[in-house]
Length: 469
Ligand SMILES: C=C(O[C@H]1C=CC=C(C(=O)O)[C@@H]1O)C(=O)O
Ligand SMILES: [Mg+2]
Image 1 (spheres, rainbow, N blue to C red):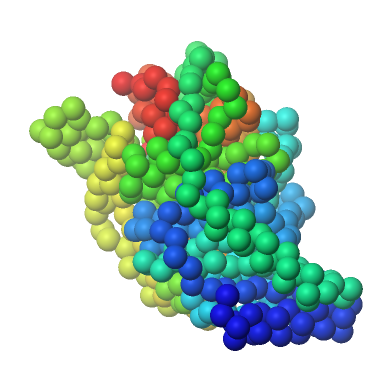
Image 2 (image 1 turned 135 degrees about the horizontal axis):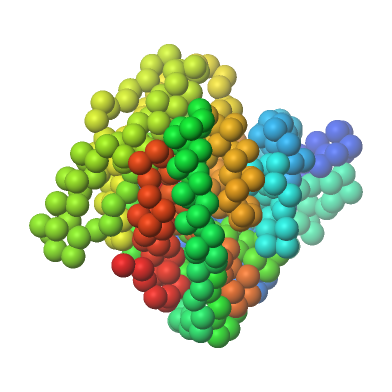
């Protein structure tokens, strides 16, 4: 480390500890520097032993920003109620107000950053499946590698208390940094070997879809998203690194994410952005309406064309466009929404896709967008409250973080949240995969079953399972 940088870091730490004394509380200190590392997965892997259970990974489809976090200096978990978004935001703002930063302090997605997510529904109590995650879970990592464009940055965070010593901190940081940098070469990743694959209650699920269609025809419920689960058992404990490596290679148009909690890991490749905020520019994605991919180029184009003109899928999609556009209109001075959907083609599935852009009013935060948008009718249904209440009653599944908002926010209020679909919960040598579909009046249980089958494929492929046709 250059002497001047070390001096700056030392002085910053001293001032953070002094602040902690003055406030008689904890003060977040962050040091940010450029490093040479173009393989974020090797950084994730380097933290495997020391930071097991406290790692995260995030890569956006444009590969503008890749963030890998190891360890946590603070875990934020709000109470499970409608205020959870504001509560997390307030705790974050409070930490920011006293924070001290040194090094490169003007690059988004570096420095102090909060990463994590919210469960789909705060009114569902978590069972054993999701108990490590609770209703919401956010980390401020101890070490974070941010790849912003071509440049990598290493952020080291510390939470200083009044009695802490700069000297001890510096020694500790140096030891940990060298350990990480030395471990960056990585070892060959081990393939996960599947021993069992089982659909959870397929007959019951189809029956539930049939009943939901009847309800949509006879009540004011317009749409409900119903999900189902697939259970996988492996020979040994599943390596999330291997899963991430596969997802990165196979799903280039999706957000690749993982979030560890205790021994469990929520991992996925979601194509669906909930909200991105960069200054006062905001972006969301309406993604609903699905079709498989063709085996030949002609067949694929034909299926795509069918999807673009299919009334059932267009209706499913339009509900999402209207809801997101309205939510944007309420807090934006300008909103741009294309009039027709396009196709988004991923390896196993194609979707109707409408991007929404806006310039938001002064002071509207990313957490407010998350709160207003979640769940969109692509994850919940319409009307929103009724659909969520019915999902709670009839779905027979604990969604946990599946279909919930997951992402990051930095100290400048910039950030991005995607929805945690095309995902799996890894628990030792078992995995639960989740997939849902928008049920509308023209849905049939069989075709929705097939559609959800295809939606399992991104995770099945990454995990080495048997793909659905
Ligand atoms: C809820 C899921 O997909 C949503 C996103 C895109 C298309 C959807 C559909 O066509 O039904 C779903 O609304 C899922 O993959 O679990
Ligand atoms: Mg659908």
